[in-house]
Length: 439
Image (cartoon, rainbow, N blue to C red; front, side):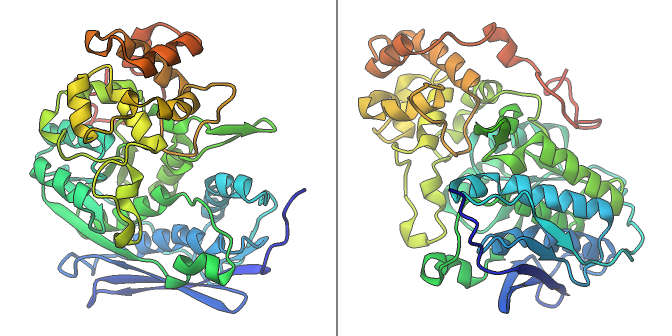
């Protein structure tokens, strides 16, 4: 039975305020009388006076609302007096409907009938964005994907900078290895959403990478940067689950579809500004093989989500070795790093050493009795190739987990070599399409 008892009838965009004196952008929303406020903080010594700031702040305002809309998921979004075009409304609706696909599925609450009303069509003129030299900004999360992108990009463009939201020890440790400067941002959610259970709000996954992308664009504009370079690989576009012929993707805001739509939105308001993923045509296997060679990062990188809990008191100080993300990172790196190296990474709790982790691996490998996790993990095909390559390593001989999984699994799809070559559409253009990154 469908749960359609939505609390509230209308979610409203109230306005966005820019305060150069404090370096803050404040987005305001309401839902049937309840007010929500989100504040993004950026350095006050950046260039807050240029016209591109208002355009970037408006994009951030449009995307940030999704964290508050989902507290009740009403059938109507009212843009109020927000300047907006028809194309932007269409993009925003896709962002809500597809970005909240997992939320909708888990809560059994369809939002396909979502209506977006209001808004003003009187936009200011686009702000051309052409700078004399390439100065990319790279959102950095301290995992294998962003590490590989940073190392590739800084070789071509020494005037690169990292972009980091908040402060998390694993990200800081990995960022220090890059030796690049950092443009920092803070994001303060309305405290009401942190009390969702207490206040009776709906809860679930939101496409946070989309919101962080908008903050990164604002930071890039403020710091006179030419591009935001993401680290989203080919398999980020793969659906997590299919329901009635429709794919639901936990990683929607890392997908090619989101990237294409967001680029079109930027092209209309900041023509000349670049936003793309440098890993879009590549598999996680391609990324893992390159990361394995970057040994200086092995002691400090972290992808376990328990290290990034909103509540600092609940953050894990090391890899937990128990979650789906730990299992995936272990599996995808196992063909390219020794068992000894990975045991050191996981502090003696390597998932591939523990038979109790078999259910996690079965989900990653597409076992018919298991479910692919709603996590930022690779495609089933990538995982099956990783399984075959890892099991063939001499230092994994006799590994009970790999032996059991190989006995259960179907063969890897297609020739292994195809997983190490470009395999999909992308938006990487000169001067970023270097020979060693793209053919």
